[in-house]
Length: 312
View 1 (cartoon, rainbow, N blue to C red):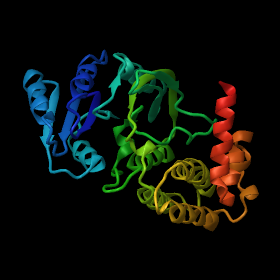
View 2: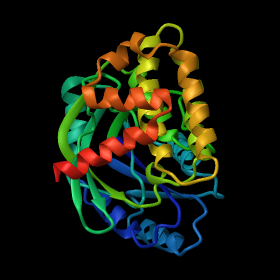
View 3: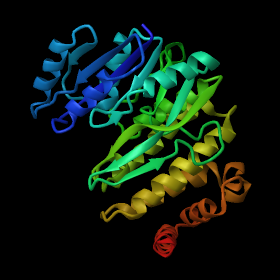
View 4: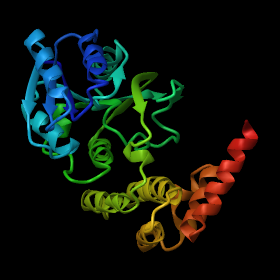
């Protein structure tokens, strides 16, 4: 079996048919689709059963009690027969030739991981091409597992954390740390449905502290030998992304969460200017990082919003 496509599913009745149709329409040869119904209650389960009955040679279906996306994916990893693993969110779709192109690049180059760009599709119908990487760094595409394929041997015993946000980041970061070669297909082949209530646009400040638990898990594998790479994740995924995300929220505990996030950064990077990953960033990203590091995150967001308005 060349490829296993793993799809955790939970209460996505308006979108699941589009997702499954895009998977069944893939031009890559010799692949399977592993669906894990994570305790859906909205009628999604009936649709999954319908598709399994229509395509028994292509689709397998497992039902589990609700336990989260990471746990559902872990069940499917155990059952996967493919030489490569791919992961799709059940409300998204992909280009018909996405996996053909990713697998072909892996076979041509011997890459352990192959990554493609995104097409973000908003609820109001807008679309936006998003590059997989905004910096030139071997770990820059960590974040999601969905726009990638992974060689099964590379995955080994690594699994998605359960019960935590940012489980995608942990898994893809571990794969990039382990990989000898990563290749990129610079095309927006993964079509990401960008909802207002997604993890990246949430209004739950405290759950963003899960990022620190993820960083602690990564530190076990990275420190002390790979401190520079660990600091890259710190400044990009905690100092820049997570603090900026929480700073835009309106919750009673926002201030305490921000204080804890900054304290975590300071414990590893007591002097920001001494951090090579920070110094290598472009001017705008360094400005936001510096202000976030100093506790002036609202000022950073205000300046970015002003710049965005002026650019229009």
